[in-house]
Image (cartoon, rainbow, N blue to C red; front, side, top):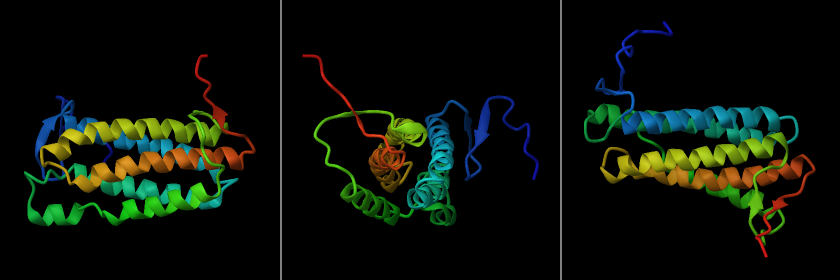
Length: 187
């Protein structure tokens, strides 16, 4: 498979259904944010794997889910065949899996009593960065869901994923032997 096709040289790109759209279309904004998120999750995984293999395995699973999510976004419900939509349907059960992981990690963390600042070693800080990019991806998906172009399960997963990434960042800080950095409001 060739890496370059030259078909996008004039500022358009193809969705899975073959439809060409401008590269600055909201669909590609969403896909780009999901791709960026996946890259940052991969970086966090590399930092985290030596100290927390369980969370690293979860992050690898999330990377696969983000590829699936991208396929769902790249297959507009309102302009794709039933076969393509079925092939790229996003599994809503992946959100329940995130919730189980969040609950498991939360049970092992000290309770939150105030806001915390992003940080917590390389892995923790990278997971906080992933969380903020996840929120951007979610914002990009909202109009696609609202307009019936993308399955609501995609937006729900991204919403829950940002919660997971917050919890995983706290776990990473704990694994690195650092404490949450607390936010202190002005007095």
